[in-house]
Image (cartoon, rainbow, N blue to C red; front, side, top):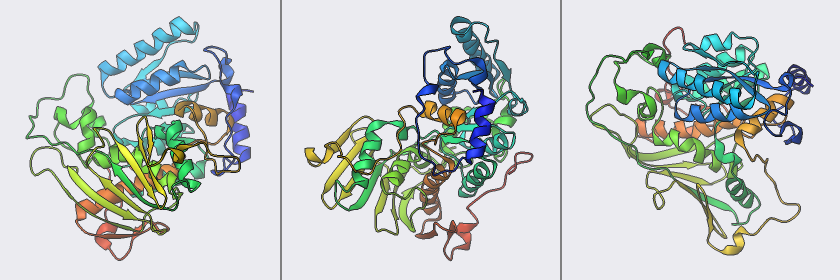
Length: 430
C-alpha cells in the first residue's frame, strides 16, 4: 500500500485520539526494505542540537525519506544537507539529493513532503506546527508544544480539526522504566497517590552581554520570527534561548515538559490539570536572562494529589518522586528506585497497562503511515505543557492562582487571564 493510500485509510478511520494503540510490525525492517512509494517524505525544520538527532533518525529509517532540511544558519544548513546526501549515497543509492532551504515556507509548499520534524527554538513551535498542518503535513515537534497556554490550545484544536498526526518530543514516554513507574502507580502499587515531587535543576544567570553585528549567513530576523524584536547577541540564540521568557520558560518548561508530562501520566490527569497553583521563586536582577533561577511551586489537583516542582537536583540528576499511602517510587533518567523491593515486582494479568512505545520517532512514523495511535498526541502534550506554563505564571505574578482546567481560564483573575497568550510579530500570526 502506498503512503498516500495509508493517509486515505487514516482519514476514513477518523484518527480518533482514543483509538486502540497498535504497533505495526510491518513498518519495521532493515534499511532500504520499504519501497519508495511506501515511505513518508520528510522535511526537517531547525537542525541545531536536537534537530540534528531527529534528522539523523528520520533519514535512516527504511520507512522514511529526508527530502529537505531547513535552518536560518547557512553554515549549519549546508552541513546538514551534506550529511543527509552522504548517508543516502552510501546506504540508499538513487535516493536523490536533499534540498536545503533558509525559509521554512519553501518546505511547506512542497506537495511531495508528507511530514515535518520541528526542532526550532520554542517560540516557533506553535506557528510552525499549525502552518504545517494547514499545508497538509503531519508533525513531529520537539517539546514543549507552545510558549503559552493559548498557543497550545490552538495547536491541539488545529490537529484535531484537520486530522493531522502530531507527536510531541516528550521522549520519556517511550522509555520502559518511566512507563512501568506510571503503570505501578495507576495499579495502586504504592497505595493511593498523594504527592509527586519534581526536581528539575536551578536556572542559569548571565551578566550584561555585548551586541556585535549579526554573523554572516545567519537570518536573525527569521530566528526572532513571532517574538518581539530585540538586538542580536550570541547569548540570546542557540541553546540559550531557553533562559528568556520571550522564547521559552526556563528550566520549568525545558525539563518540566518531560517530567511534568510523566506526572500527568502517572496521575491519570492527561486531559485535565491542577486547580490551585502556589509557590515562590527568584528571578535574575541583571543581565540578559529573565526566567526563574530558584523555584518551589505546588500544584494541587482536584483528586487531592499535590505536585511539587522544585529547583534542586537528586544527586546531580533530574528526578520524579511519587509518594503514596503504601510507599514511594523515585524515577531518574535511567533508574527506578522504591521504598521496598517488592514495589517494583512485575504486574500480573488483568492489570492496567499503558500505551507502549519503544522508540519515540518510530512511533510517530507508524502513526503517520498506518493511522496507529501516537504515544504523545497534541491534547496530552498541551495539557502537560500547561502545567509548566501555570508554574511559571504563578512565579511571575507572585501569588496563588486558581485554575479551571475545563475552561482553561483562571478563576476571578483578569490579570492572569491576560497572560494566557501574547501578540506575535507579523506575519507570524495564528
